[in-house]
Amino acid sequence: MKQKISHNTLSPQDNLPDGIADPALLIKKITKKVTISSNAKNINNTFIWVKMAEEIIDRYSNFDDKLIINLQYHLATVLCDMLDYAKAKDLLENAIERMLFQKTKDYKLFSKCYMYLAKVLRYMKDFNNAQENIEKALKIDKDNFNNLSELAELLFLLGEHKKAERLFKKALGICIKSNGRTHRKTASIYFHYGIFLFALGQYDTAQKYMNKALLIYIKSVGEKNLYTLRIMGHISWLLYYKKEFKAAFVNMKTAYNGIKIILGADSHESMICRLNCAKILVAMKQYEEAVNYLENPVVITDKIETMLLLDYEESIMIAPEVLFLKKGSSAIRLIDILSKKNIPVINNASLIKKLKNDCRQFEPIPEKHYKNIAKVYVRLHGKKNRS
Image 1 (cartoon, one colour):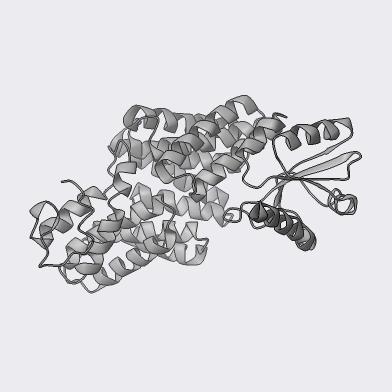
Image 2 (tube, rainbow, N blue to C red):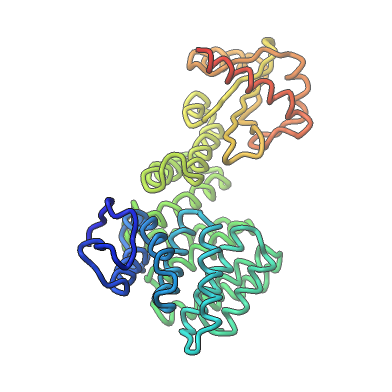
């Protein structure tokens, strides 16, 4: 079935894509297109069907509850991968509401909807409602490894580390027994357990589990799959904390280039990876290359011995962040190099004096300096607009 862009509106009377006149058949086909199976080689191919799936749900919302609920669930999982949590939440809540009124329920799908809604709410930092929904999923299917893993992740965020670790191990044991040690579902739990261990500072053990997950994903879906790239990004940051900066940069750059192709250069995830590339290069003292990964870099200096490099990307930062602070002859040399790369240099001794004792590397500037830094960016953008 090929997507036909010309079919922007759909109704029971329309000549549907590829001549499909039966709404039930169309819904089933679109559901298949937005289903991310464990064998999916490239979920980028799934994203192009999202708009049509959304339209079909809207047009046929009262056609057949079971078909629409199934489509809502699968579309929500794709939207979650696109980081569109608000839409995913609405779809899952509607699907659950529909199921509550069904006489004959698909309890497996019911559990999945509760579990995925818990995941979305966790991403949205609504932990109380997330816990309520994952507990509902577990009441339906108490030994489901996905439900156990989701609860483990949530308990970790709530600070219940021992309970979380027990659940991760239980989920992993059930998954290995059901699917084997080299299945993608097992790899997913390896990965999330690795993130948990990483957060606890157990870097070597965390890397072992993440590497297991990465090898399984590369073998099963390839190096250019979104999930594979996300694992590489997390391994990169783990390597950064282990001060293995060269390997960290190689992994992060690969993740950035791949995610940029799949989700777009302006996606939240791509921009985070790009900024992380810059931070790793700064750690490697490769400042000239680092600025190539920044969106709005600006140097503030006193022209004597101190320079501060800031960057600001509104969609991923709450305020401009500090990339590095330099003093002495190295600051003077860097100012000369960066100015030749057309990085704006602001000479403001009084501002630098206020900033240099308050700012920390890779952290937003303190709130008390917002007004002064805002003036700097307004001035720069004003210059750009006049040029």
